[in-house]
Length: 336
Image (cartoon, rainbow, N blue to C red; front, side, top):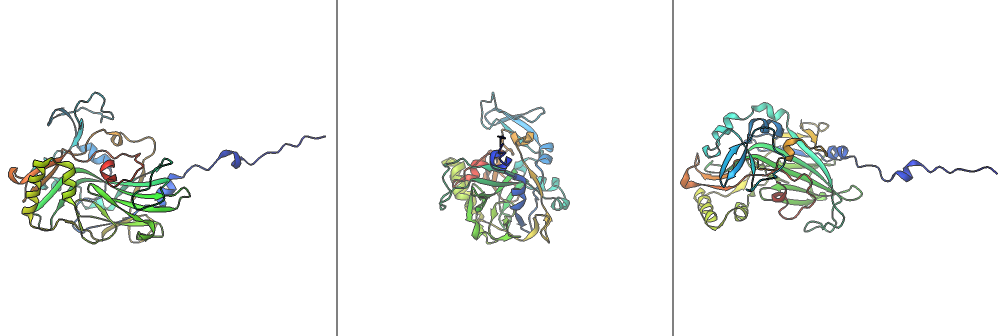
């Protein structure tokens, strides 16, 4: 009697097909709009890193230059933050030096966004207001050389170097979109996918605020919530002083958006194509930098910072947590 050999199809033994992260990043690539007075286009982080000094904190508030290469570990550090990037312009000199040194209008012809897809661990709780936890997060990061939020009359300013902002699309285990989350100052906003404006069926529309680069779902002027953010960064004496400076501005503190510099997927019409760069497992050196991307963050009143009408608010933004999988109420603070 002959022997019958049953050969099962390879697919039944191979398990589920690997996730095509590049395809997901392209499918949900955002459409971005900017304020017409926005000075800074989203750019490659490499150009910033190439011009910035790397410094190490050797005593509280005292920094010394570090020779190349860019550090990727804080081992042996006793102070936090241990390292920082610092552009040649002095932050306490105000906005003018950065404006003079910035790239020309050609930067708007090649805007760049970084992308990464992360898996959410089983058992992770959904964010407030949602009943289903995501299985995957499709995350996009935008980098700006400088953050120069200001009031309309340019009387009150808040600024720092090296600004990171984020757009996240949450997917279910069946790869259905659940919600979008946009970073805004020390927090962010989450909106159900069905309520998100989209182009081309799957590309979320996002409006970037002038100067701060906070990201919103509409162009409606929106409170910056500076007071809430300051309570997280400052002790009581510094908070009192910052509050007094803000009151002197005598203007409503809002983010302002617009519809200039439309950028997005290359297949959509009337948009400047975004350069999408996926960050895989082999991260570039700068993406592993264990420090801050600015010499600090400064709030001031007037044309240039002066000692009586300015205050340092903190150490500036950190390198994003590329593997973050939770979106709590302060998700942006935790990840950048």
